[in-house]
Image 1 (cartoon, rainbow, N blue to C red):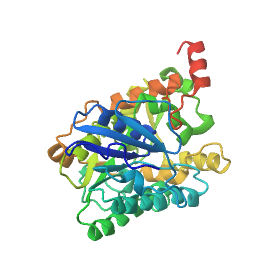
Image 2 (image 1 turned 30 degrees about the horizontal axis):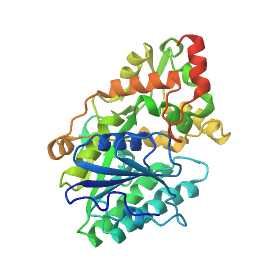
Image 3 (image 1 turned 90 degrees about the vertical axis):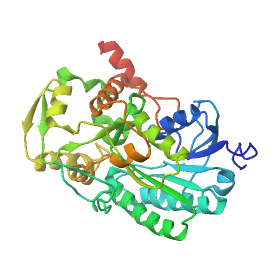
Length: 358
């Protein structure tokens, strides 16, 4: 392994390492950085090197799990490390996701210290927050204890505690924690279908004429954001002298009424219990990858107040939450993706959609 490729460049040219650079968020962050005149180079780290080649970007295959390659040489000479790598599956084996998401993240954090990188920008999540209100938005002071039953929220909350201690031990490192809402873009559709819905939800079936009813469940009110808008906040955090947590979300919150309008359907009030029971049965049979515990967590997520991001990052989303979600749905119907391993397009679904005239 070699140091960051821009390590010998003139002072003032920003050099950024993006860990987990080929997924939903990573591709948008790399694209935003590659278009920023103040950024000299980007080093993208991922398990597999993609065919995608944005400007000013170099690639290196690396595994962040314990026993993986040495990260310190790759971080040496960087002005900031953006940590995005995350494993959502297998949900039936949380010890495996813990190994990547928690132990791998700690390896990244420690390598930042060892390499002398002055800034660490970490992808936390709305999922790190404790259950909260649905009728008002909370700021970054809301407790971050997650929902303990779901591996995703449990791991995000645990890393918040790790970073609390990390910041006390390394006050010279500028630590930023991004806490975005659900992130959507067209190119992430195939990946997100595979992660959360599995084979029971072919993308071609997500059409308004095939979804007559949206269940109006207690607690079904959440926020969304276009991934490119989240990437703009990450880019700003690289170039501005900010630190601490930032909520990221667009308006309006998505609930049964909004979703019914998107699908040209009607909303139907129903208790969450039967829906959870059906999901739990499908999950136990390995028919869907999303666990019922994550379903429970979603119904308890608070709404986010993004005032701090607007004021300190000069950040404003360019798309509404509805626009982001509709773009995702269009990508789902078309089997959209990118030339990276995580975002590989669902060719079979895309062909079926074209044949069906979708």
